[in-house]
Amino acid sequence: MSFKYDVFISYGSKDRPYAMRLNESLKLLSRAYAPFFDAASLRAGDDWEHQIQQALEASRHLVVLWSDHAKSSDWVLREIWTYYATAKPKTNMNRRLVFVNLQGINEAMRGFQQVNRPQLLTSYPAIQSVTNETWRDLMRDVEEGLNPSRPLPVPVVVLTMKEAELAQFSPEQWQQVSEDFDLPKDVISERYGLTRADWRPFGGGETIATVLEKIKNQMAATFQAFRPYWNPPDESFWLDISEARNYVSRVFDTGEVAVLIVDPVALHRHDVHQRLMFFQESLSSSRVVVLTLPHFNARPEILQLRSALMNRGAPYFDDYFQLAVRPRRRVAAHCGWNITDLDDIQRLILAATVHLGAEANRESGSTFLRHGS
Image (cartoon, rainbow, N blue to C red):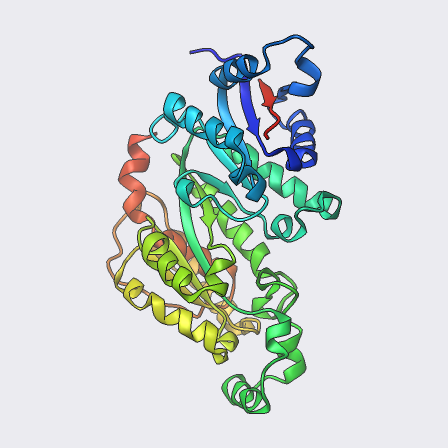
């Protein structure tokens, strides 16, 4: 089936600045999308509603700018469900439904690609506060979302805290932290920022958001038939204890692979420890990866040992350090190693995805920008 348009962008009218910027950015992507923009293309006297409906039906993909404005827009909701019914993106991998989350998450559509950029969510609705770097990352996610390979949502929860929450530690808590980690208060304090995404493990300069981005890219390079993306909880996970429990049971525990990352210092906070308890049943699943990340670098001797094992013991250690999907041989033992850097995290996450190998073997234009109400 041929399509007149590649992408139909749906948005609420108050999010028009984001839609206009997305429209312009799509022209610059590698596939050189040629946009159909309603304000420029619809003429006086046109049957506006009919033209919009025709364009929706003639579009290969649908990208939705999701916010409270979109959620309350009858037009946006109608476009989503019309596309869902006609394109059948749940089973038709050549038709993509992508949500760019400006505010919140569309809970009813978690099974589809959800683009979640913490910096974008934090800046909304002030588009002028969105940095060029954040927007470039967003467009890369959108382009990946239009990829016909099967999306693989990976629930990920980072149990950490903000610098403002660390500042609330009592002298007794700081004494416990000192006893646990033997690190000065100022060293620990500099690992935190304004948001949880700003936490910097491993004693380096990279935030957990950057670490997760690298892991996702490594997973994408490893898989052929799947396009993994992170599916984190929204802020209600931290604001409402019932929402946190529901996310774990409804999203995390049902994922094909799921990742829990624990900041050990943050466990001194009651709200973090309380949410950790919701993941007790998750420990029984081979599809779950649980990681605790330290606030210090790996000892050079440990990294040197791993390098020696990989170089001198190859290929014996390949299935441990450099997992393939589908695996060359099944390693039944659940091996452990000091989680001290990015390579170890990637190895463990890929280990939890080996069950996707069989499926991986089996599955070996223009933009339409519309104005919501």
